[in-house]
Length: 275
Length: 275
Image 1 (cartoon, chains in turn cyan, blue):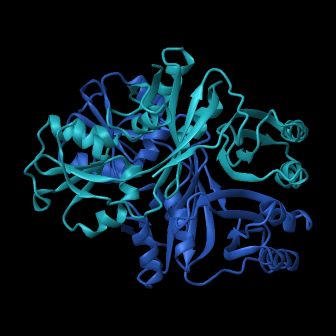
Image 2 (spheres, rainbow over the protein chains, first blue to last red):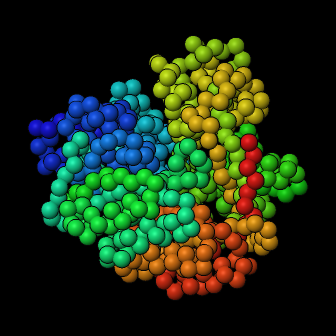
């Protein structure tokens, strides 16, 4: 079974995503940081990595957006997971015993409505959802609860105090699969690129025209700061179609004429949605 | 002196920004969350608010981007601050005593290079830079240090262990001033708008054309998820010029024809940069 790198502890949502993407025929390997995941794939210690890239409620996971630019790896797959957050605590702990709720800042934000309704409870940001569950279990913290997946609760012997505490039903996260070798999808595909623009009037308008002129559908656009000079940006674009399609490869050639930098992150099959 | 709401404890970078924007003729009022800042301005408890909107290294502060859409307040000013992070600890504490470094996740990210170089020290995310300094001071934590401003160190009686620990020299943060009453800038101005697009092919391309056709310079574009349906987006756009300029107001009229929602966040003078 392929070894696949993910960030977080056993029980993380990224581990779920790996099991779903490879239909359980996979051996997920926990890593401390997102950078460690990229490093592990780059060095060949894992065949692939799986990273969250965007949540439908809170937006992009910027560290991963930036790492896609930094590392010479290809995006080869996508999967979308409905994220269901649980409040987990040691067995026997009741809601009124809880003084602190631990989780990753993104998870705290996705459950902000629930947290605001809990008077006298402090929310404590941590590095990890499943890691928070693990910590409560290992340190036997009877006044704390963690926000994490139901599976994290099982993994660390915690009980579910409350289920489905996320703000919105539309709480989906898109995960990307990264590998050293680019894919060549034939069925319904999308392509991700990143570029920087020449400093010309209407530069972005001209960049988008290469797609508009060919009736290529844009799925997403996002800007991220370039670190060397303030208020200059990288643009990340997802569009329908694969590089193997001639109208897409011509659009990319055309785009190259008006960019100072252009990198194709990968073409990959449009991801399944797991409810 | 006008009362101005900011997020964080006394000593926060936002408080600095307020002092700089109003050239010290201001009375900054601390608030726990960004939402509290918006609420305070909306309810008239403070004449204005000041919020960080974007850091040149780590990108947008999304909570504030989202709150600008939610509240009917106007952006009336801008100021840009060079952010210099200090490592602060109780007087007498040496670097080798430090086991934990506390700060807001954005500050931890802006100092990630320094943090990676410190072996055996755990970084602990908190809600606040200045708040971390305050906590260390009040709880007399001798094994901890905080990442915050030099002024936070003075405010809470902490010594500076190390200065300028941010990753990049280009560590600038843009702050926006929000008020109930819109401004009407006459000198060099910019305008911020937010819109959603009709579901038509090349929609974004058409939206940008209203600016390109009038030679209006785009300064920034950003997308944020719409929460009700996954993978639909709000677009935030900054452009050169004020609504009072007739070519800008015509562009906005034109934009209204191809959007399903359009809100002008405000026209305001381009901000000073404080080194």
